[in-house]
Image 1 (cartoon, rainbow, N blue to C red):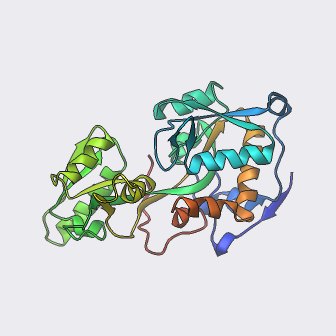
Image 2 (image 1 turned 135 degrees about the vertical axis):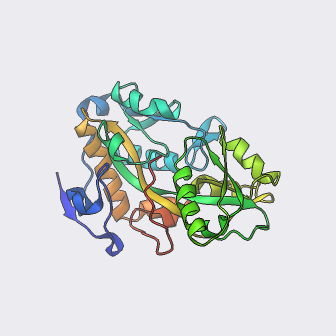
Length: 293
C-alpha cells in the first residue's frame, strides 16, 4: 500500500468521513498508486453502484445509459480498476441500507459526508456540495448573495439543509433592522422551481450543481439563472461503502487519490462546470456553513 503526503494547491483535502480536516490523518495523506480490488470482485468483473440516477448534472438518463459527473467518475474508477460499472437505481434514502446489506457495492449521489453517516458507512470523498439561489432570468430582485434575500419570499425543499441557511440569514436581517425572509417549503424540487418561474417566490435555494444545470440547460436557460457567484453550506460529498468492506474502500479511495493527483478529477469537474467545487479549492467567496444533506 503506497501512501504519499500531499498538499494539493496548498490546501488541505478532507478525505475521511465525518471529521474536521485538522482531526483527520487522511487529510494530509493520499495513496500514490491504485490498490487492486478484492479478488472476488476482480473475478466477477464488475462493480455495482447504487444511485438515484435522476439528478442532473450528477447522474441522469441518456438514451439507453446514463451521464453526469458521477457517471464519469464511476467509469474512470472502473477503467483504472479493470472492471465494468453496473448501476442499480435506488431512492436516496435507500442508498445507505443498500450498501450496508450489500445489495450494491457502493453508493454515489449527492451524499453529504456527515458524522452521522460516517458512523455507519465509509466515505471516499471526491468533490464538494454547496447551496446557490436560482432566480428568474434577468434577476428581477437583484439577488447576488443570501444577504439580498431579506424581506423576499423564497422556496426550499422540505427537509433540506437550506432551511438552516435561511434561518441564519433571518437573524442577520433582524440585526440590520430589515424584514425577515419569507420561507416557503415545497415537497418536491420541481414545485419549488415552478414557484420561482411563476414569480411567487424570488429564489429557490437548492444544490449548487443542480441549480447551475437548470440555469445552463437549453430547455430552461431562458427562464432561470443563478443569483450571484457566492456559494453556501459547502461540504464534501463522497462514494459510500460498507464498514465491513475496507478493502473495497481502499481500492476506490486510492483510485480517487490518483485521479486527484494527475488532474483527471479537475478535468471531469470542469467538463460539468463544477471546478470551483473541487476538494482542493476552498473558494474565497464561499460562505463556510456546515451542511449535512
